[in-house]
Image (tube, rainbow, N blue to C red):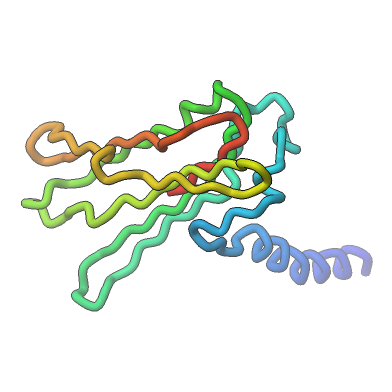
Length: 151
């Protein structure tokens, strides 16, 4: 009886917990509360913490496969600056893929207000790796301890 009751509660509770962990956040809507975090609650020695990470693939109206990647990271100290450089690869345009847009920003707290520094396209670099693959690399601007980066 107790086993059945426990199993029933588990079946009801686990989906609720899963849902809470995967709620979407909107790009650029960084809160003062997030900015005021001074250390990770999970690991107080962490130099940075991923607040949100989501990848999404779908077909657009032209039946082209679209991949979106959204990441939000809190930088606690200078050792966390490594998290502000991102790179990824994709198949060359001749193979049917291309990079549409890299959107990113660094958010810092200045005089009690959140200031946004947008990633400029001229700091997004593409490099041909071997004729078939392209590497994209960028580093978020205006880093400082306490900043939040998002791309």
